[in-house]
Amino acid sequence: IGIEGFCRWKSDQNPEVPFNENVESGKALTDAKDLVRAVRLAGLYGTLLNGLATDLELPFGGYGVTAVCNDSAAIIQQCMYGESYIFPLTSIGRYLQRTVRYGHSTAERLQTMPNTVDEVNDLRALVQAMKDLPSDINATPGNANNAARRLLSTMQ
Image 1: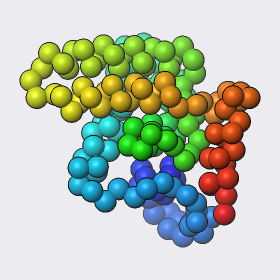
Image 2 (image 1 turned 90 degrees about the horizontal axis):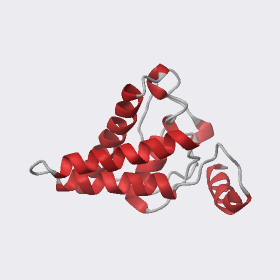
Image 3 (image 1 turned 90 degrees about the vertical axis):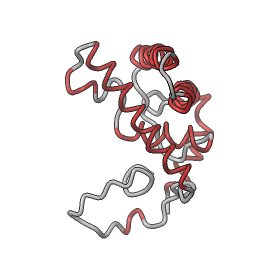
Image 4 (image 1 turned 60 degrees about the vertical axis):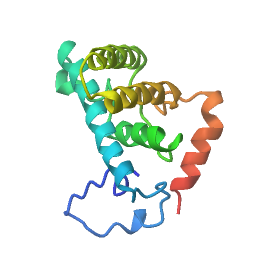
């Protein structure tokens, strides 16, 4: 889902990716409403991470401590389908907590603006997804079954 799937990143440096042809990447987005929601979720999640990194003056935009590229795909997949097929490398503890708080405060600010119902609902969904997703940065026994499921789905 993260390399050539959901996030649709194409480097064009090596268009043949046989290692990834049979990787499970979850449901395809074909419905226009789902596509619009996925883009809105991605924009809101990027806004949360960038806003927090700016406020905290984190180097490199906070990359590596607030999130990495797999997070955006995993979080959006969690919001869209209630589960993720990839390895979320969610942010390190205190930054995850700060991002959740930042998401809550951003939703509260947006709620006072007209025509922001979808954005507020999706911010709340993002915050919930951040809480629900396991983190593959820290291996825990309680996450073993979920990690094994995701690992097996990526093997050919």
